[in-house]
Length: 102
Image (cartoon, rainbow, N blue to C red; front, side, top):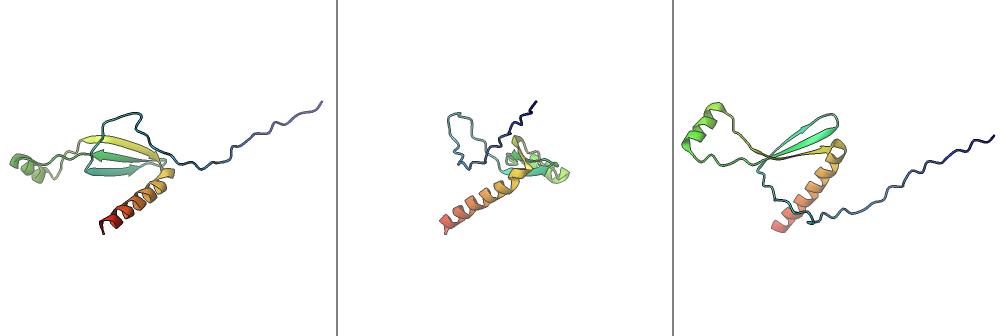
């Protein structure tokens, strides 16, 4: 009796360029404050939109409590393995932006 061994095929990685599309339309989200936190496996980017303190009472409350509410617009959780790529992409994009301003 012969025992046959099946080969497990491991797919080879293929480099592809991801092209975001606007097929699914969603509202644009504005943020003027970002909080970053992480766990052992994931990093969380919490995007907030802090409204202007438009009254003397609100300003007084903020100065007294030393706290300001920042309504969360969206939280994005990414695996820590992507953080380095995110930093690289943001750095490259920002450097291009700065170069255009010169």
